Image (cartoon, rainbow, N blue to C red; front, side):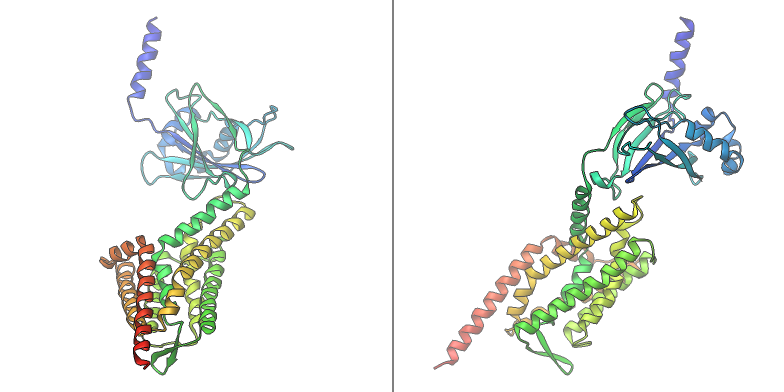
Length: 415
């Protein structure tokens, strides 16, 4: 009885302290499952029974083979029919930047022939079999078929001293579920990316007009305007699709700061062009050129997520289609009113006013992203973007009013 009381007292004392736990992040692949293990050295030392904290920086150098063997022995996935999975510790590294210090291990788990990689019993006892108070949180970090990715993991449960296994079943879902989720993510990304849309819309402002020297003059025909709009939108799509694919596949990388500054510069260039012709007739080339820069910014949301090559290709395709769908929707909402309004004298006010607003916003972003200065115009841009339907409604009302006034003037001239 005395021993039992002492044991209970020791458990309560340990639980009262902040004991670091482990984390198990699972990434599901078509034929295997990988796991990233975050193991606190303080707890691992107790179960591994070696003085890891004496010299944390040399842990891997001193114990790499033993640690690999130890970790592999204490991870035992089992197929539903009882057959064991193959387990391989692929890589290890240390996190020594802040306490508690951690060993991070990459593990590849492969099911036996004929067994599904999406349904198994996950048996885990690296630390929790020795340290009674230790807990290991298990979660899914990447699983395309159930749309788990993009920094939104799904918690599966917790393993501890008395619970060292859990049944995992990811057999639900399909590739279309992940595709739809990434497609929606692309729509959301471009709808919230006001700088990307602002560049495209400002480039469209002079599309219905004819350049005469250093000024915009009479409107061109509807067919010509539509062709210009298609060329600009298609060129922008081609530009950002190319760099989105290259960056998403990891073949092209640039620091985010210069990319974001160049995006703001692209808006400023388009704004100047909307006020006075700067590259009349070459809008498509400008769109494809700056589209390459915008694509690098889109790709920042497609950082490596543990996907296979096939799923990464689907990821890039779905995300890009979402971007295109949202872009096309915005253009279809605004372009008809711009074309009609260009037939009236009021269009000059809309064109120049919109260009000035975009230019000021671009200067604010350049100062913020390039120099770290505060950007007061950011709040106005965000507020306007949040009321996009009101902008369309106001533009439609202004167009109809301008057309009615123009018609009234023409009727008054006719005797």
